[in-house]
Image (cartoon, rainbow, N blue to C red; front, top):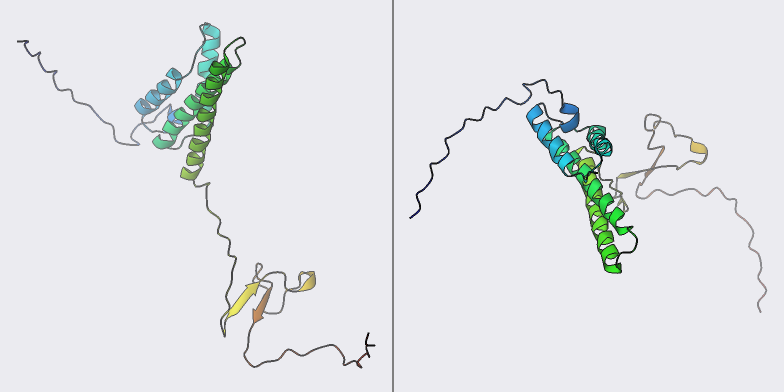
Length: 202
């Protein structure tokens, strides 16, 4: 029988209250806690397909860092989304690069392009989710049918030619005119009466 090893000793994790720190890395991860910002940044950097050349590798890291800062994350959720956007972009571009390698099989190129397309689609969906989180994806409602019941009023636009506003509606810039319905009333005809014109049969 194997002897069980000693259980690891319990370790106390000290958690700082949210907003208690003056985080220097907040423009990168969006958090007031630099431990979070540092972790998210390193996760994004480890997802970059880096070059073996040290100078080029530094530029790739700086580009990933600039991408996260450019997204201006405002909280931890946006910081994580920024890291994923950087990772998705780099992965998609690496697949596109591999698809352009000459003298490879058709299947290899097709596989790289399929992966690049999926990654690009995921990038676009995540970007839309970020915009929705920030309130940019507001829905627009278009009213197509308006029912006016007896005694009601319908506000319509561009009723009068020349953009003139009837008296009493000056304070309504989006409602230049009103159409009202009054049962039993008649609309007078402004055309003068004319003599009938004979029509020749055949």
